[in-house]
Length: 364
Image (cartoon, helix red, strand yellow):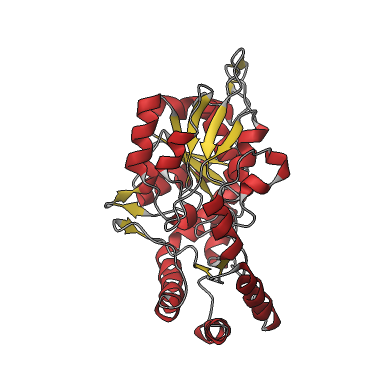
């Protein structure tokens, strides 16, 4: 069976060397040597500052909300944050879990990212933040979103789970907003098995978040902040360092797969409209069919041929009952009904990719 994605497993020999060091030091967590090393190396690789490693990408979002005051309790106000309905459930559920009401704004029909025009329509006195998503690693209209945030004194936390290594106008896309969060889940381009990170614009926000991820503890007998356990451990960091060692090889292999898809499918299927100034990371290859019926039919035919494709992101989140959304988002709902993400990972052989392409072209 050809999966929609496959974890990148780096050199076992290299990983063993890192693990040997863990055994020698007998230091497994609490900001160990490998976590510190991975922090430094990721800041250099990504071209960012104020990076904080955490245990997973959902905690990255929740810590960012807390550190930036989005989920702080205030009398007689129910906090809201504007976000996209076209994303993984964690973007919205992390807000709801922290007592912040996710308010959906519809997406751009070409880029599939939040449309700034729709953001302004749903701002209320209770709005505290905008949580846009760089969907499939595509850049949001960051200038327009940041301008709206400044005009209305709102925080901006970018869910950049798909945007590892993405460049925008020659600089890291992760530099935009008050914070940007990353997921290092096993299926991501860069991973630590489970894990995540937050990139803060301001040093003081980073310092507050550092306290939060360790229960608010700042010394053997000192607790300064309401916190939680969100720390990355040394075994996660070891995996991350090994994956980072082989990142260029991984990227090249994924790029080859991505470009073969683009060459064969760009004239017959709708692809995501990328920003012209984008340096992409080849993390996903989504296609949109002309109808939901065809999407379902192609998905079933691929499965019959031993291929698992996935309908990322379906359903559109305003239709998820536990999120209590009140207004339909027609563009998101339409794209979600017709989208399919094709298998892409560094170990996908060209002969297997031809099987996928043959099913797609036969179903034209």
